Length: 362
Image 1 (cartoon, rainbow, N blue to C red):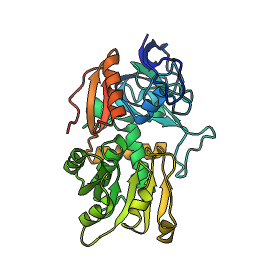
Image 2: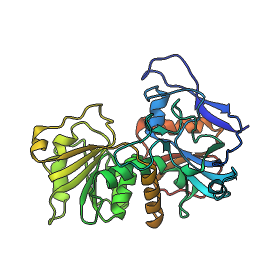
Image 3: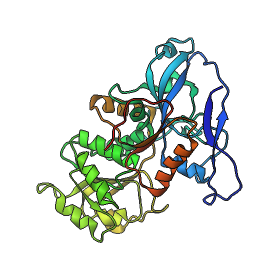
């Protein structure tokens, strides 16, 4: 029977508990007509997985394999032509279901269900194999290693919707600020905006991360811990365009107060998360400047296809911070969770179920 990694229930209140990892056997399933069996070669962590271990994520449950990001090989298929065409292909998985192509949000009355660790979706990618609908697959970009292919589905989709769909400013010559560089979504947003020809600026609490971002194409940056960092950022903007067109933000907090003065009238702030806190003040001064504040979460199946095609056409390489090898290496996997807890990573944290080609390193 295939094995998988899930969380084991122990006593504790949400936010205080930290569920241990547990290796389980999962039943083998025969694919139905439109389904395929994917042998997982690599799976990647996201911040949601850290929240799940603390019971701080909606629908947290036990016995469901963890993780939403994965790459693999299709080893068998159902009888339908749409399933058979995937046999022996290297694939990545759409990280969620229930959202086809509506630009406003998921069409499914039950909402959007992300893979990994919750009662809302029985599948997760930290498993040796799984059965999934063929419609949820995309061919893995040929220029990526297994680890790189596993590193970008969820963060890439989130970054794509925030940066391309929602901001409307992922275009040549536009000035885009991406906050909190180093996390998976922020890095993918940087790669997308840079590939589209925008001038990308970043913030971080670390000069080392700013320097790494510049190597990836960022035009400049500022340390958000420093007083008046927004003024220092303004000085770095192009002489002929001394304003920001958009801010892509995953922190929340005082980002509106800090950036509305250097945003153009009608500029856009896209929020895909609030790691600083669950509230973000929107000031009257921003209203008077016609600043748009737009929420953005994950993305549709159509946006996932568009994003993967862009990664392929532009030869974009997701940044992998660190990998461990083997589904049995619980100590190593726990170490990746510690990287998230300590915010020490720059890029994605990946488990390779079998050792593949070297991942992109910075």
